[in-house]
Length: 269
Image 1 (cartoon, rainbow, N blue to C red):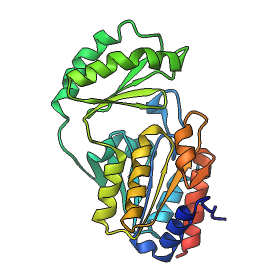
Image 2: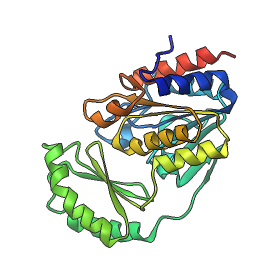
Image 3: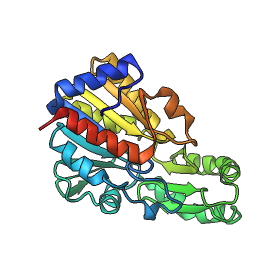
């Protein structure tokens, strides 16, 4: 059964999507939403049934997209998404697009290489377990494997903020991560651009982390512009901010998969 959003705006958004699915956009994050969070990013895999859910939904909704901070091609390979027909993957917060087997996007900002060169010296005294994920267009410092993840995050925040400023980047927090990336790039801009490109009549976005809040902002702005939408949270004890703002809260990636399948079933063939 398709769960009902808790808010009037969310219910209106879902009703609009079901009424005109061919002009709908359903967008989901990857880590923590389609795929459970794991200690090592390279080990992330979609929850059971996620690929089938995307495949079915992509034939019943105008646009189905994965919107991620990771490189698009990495998510395509980790997720096994190459064979999901009609799927769009927006990587690096919309800087990259993968669709129909083709990847497009600009070169990295020059400041990313400067930060890449300076980061090892900055982290030489970091707590054990702190790791760096090089995403080509950005650099992510992970503290999840440290003995005190929250303490390590707090300790590194100011030095990394200074490095970001020096390199013309911005420092963006997430779930036990601090990301150095080009300013003005986020999931909200990526989602809004996709909605406008497809002339969507309704939009659903599912996310789980602080980096997904701009997509929530985008949906609220789209509502004011007359495009109904639904904000959905893949719940986690670590991120309260999304649960407080979501129209619908789901219990992690397995529940997200069931929601996508129920949405496809409600639309029908």
